[in-house]
Structure formats: C-alpha cells, structure tokens
Image (cartoon, rainbow, N blue to C red; front, side, top):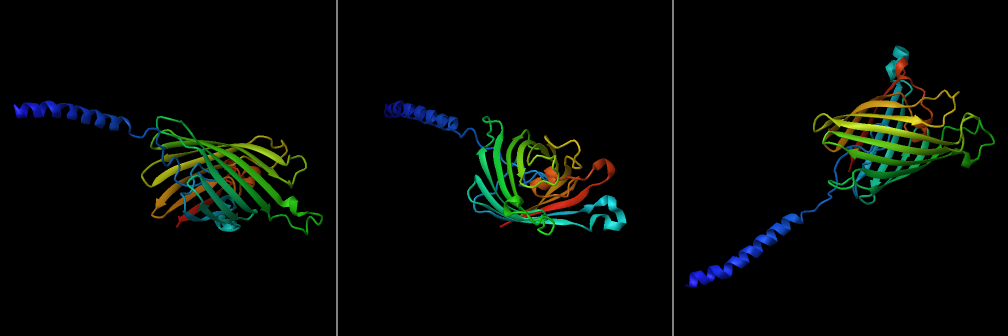
Length: 279
C-alpha cells in the first residue's frame, strides 16, 4: 500500500519534470548568429562584413607588385611595387577602427555592424564602412596653390553579405567616395560605385575569393577601368594570408575604385597579397 501511495505521488512529479525538460528544449536559443561568412577583413580589395573581435589588434601588410606585362624589364612585377601598412583594433565586437598608410593616402576608418545574419532569422549581414583619407600623391611643387583641404578623400560603403552554405558567401557593396581633387576636369568629385564579391571554401583552410567594382558615373573619356580581382585565402595559425591577381595596383578605396588602369584582356595585371596578423 505504501509503495502504491508513493507511486501515486511520484507520477505527477515525473510528469512535471518531463514537461520542464521539454520546455527547456523548446527554449534553445533561436536566431543565432551565422559565423564566418568571410574569414578575412577584405574579400580581395573590397571590405568584407567581418569585423575584429573586441580587444583584437591586427597588423596588416597589403602589397601589390608591378604589372606582370612588363616581363623581364620589370622583373615580372617585382619592380614598382606599392605597399600599405595598417593597424586595426576591435573596440567592441561591433566596432572596428583602423589607421593606415599606403602609396596614395594616409587614412583613418571605422567599420561597424548594423545587423547580423541570423540562423532561421534575418537573412543578411549589414555592415557600414567609413574612412577619411589624406592624399599624399599631390605635390606642392606641381600644385603651388594647393590647400590642405584639397588633399581630403572621403569613403562611405554599405556592406551587405549572405552566407548561403558552409562553402559559399556573397556580398554587394554600394559605395560613395569623394575626392576634393580629381585629375580630370570632366570627372565629378563625388563618385559612385557598386562592388560585388564572394568567397567559396575549398577546404577548412583554403578558399577562392573574387571581387569586382562597377564605377557608375565615370566619364566616357576616362582612362580608368573597373577593377577585377581573383585570389585565395589561406589560414595558417594566427593569421590569414591572401594572395591574388588584380587589374588594380591601388589599395586605398579611391585608388582601386577610381584609378584602376590594368586590363585583364591585355595581361596588364598585378600580383599581390594581404597578410593579417592578429594579437
């Protein structure tokens, strides 16, 4: 009789426990963030939606050799190379700041997350990028009446990406950039472009990356072209090593978006790399 009474009282407790367990299973967090649409901070030339984690400090070396079309005269690109050095820091998980020096400009930038891509939720990731640059190619000897403000360059981008599968991620990047000085009177100081790019993962450490940018208001007489870049990302321990070929030797946004002179059809392309080291 005592055993029967014990089971009578125990049964409701077991039922409640089962309901609590099922409720716990139902409360597993939904709308979790989609991780690693891109492993590097840039696809090739175009910024990706990836940000530095809070407290992470990056040292980045971006290097572009000369055009391979010069052949032996240019040491197949080893001559006339350009380099950018960048220091980048994650202030928070959603805000990254950086300072860089390239062949074209000193620049300071911020990159900040507006929306994450969520599993079974928001379908895309949205990140904004803004930079202010100081053009150091302009020489006072060539432009004696030049003022400090003439050197300023401003860039604003909206980076929109989606990780479709474990292997494939794509991005579109509508861009506005303004150069206070342009070398063609017919070219507007305010310029617009749309970048597109993607990453396809081949192995856990290797991916193929491609990006392209279409300039929207370039003059028909301009000598400049739209940049196309193809490369690979290689993860090795504490850094990502990016190797690529591009029709642009420029590294700063205004450089590759507004001043690309290379042409894949003529073999006028530049080999380069981006080396990221995180501390």
